[in-house]
Amino acid sequence: MRKKRVEWLLRFLTQQINSDLYSGESNSYLTLSLQFYKEETKMAFYNHVTLMGNLTKDPDLRYVPSGAAVCNFGLAINRSYTDEDGEKKEDVTFIDIVCWNRLAEACAEYLHKGSPAFIEGRLKQNSWETEDGQKRYKHEIVARSVQFLSNGKPNQDEDKEDSDDESDVPF
Image (cartoon, rainbow, N blue to C red; front, side):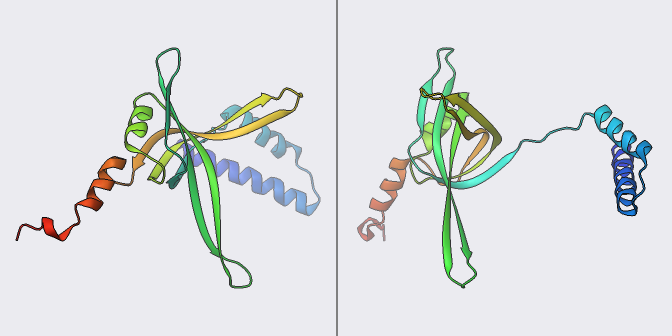
């Protein structure tokens, strides 16, 4: 209930300030109230990413000195669209994924290049400086959960193809 009142007050103050700006009048009291309100409420931030795509390479499982497992892999996300000329186009986005602990071990065990996966996590930006002094940035997703969208391990998929022989039918 309090949240709805706060949201209403914020919308009301914003509308009042905007209407004063369009009319040429200035209501410094409303402007100060809105600034004070925003500082007092400490606006929350939300960092949540949901992606679905195919792995671009086999997962790379390592262990850090503390003993925690870390798994890195790439995810390709395809997008199909029609351009202004009516021509169908394909666009691919490549994203780096990082998994930790038991999730890392499960990803290394059950995923392989080409596996479809549904990833939920948070966006993280890494930065470093090169030898020539240039600042570099890289974004990656730190996974909280990974849904494996294919069945079994890579070897099991190959076994299924071999068992499709009609001579194996029992009747």
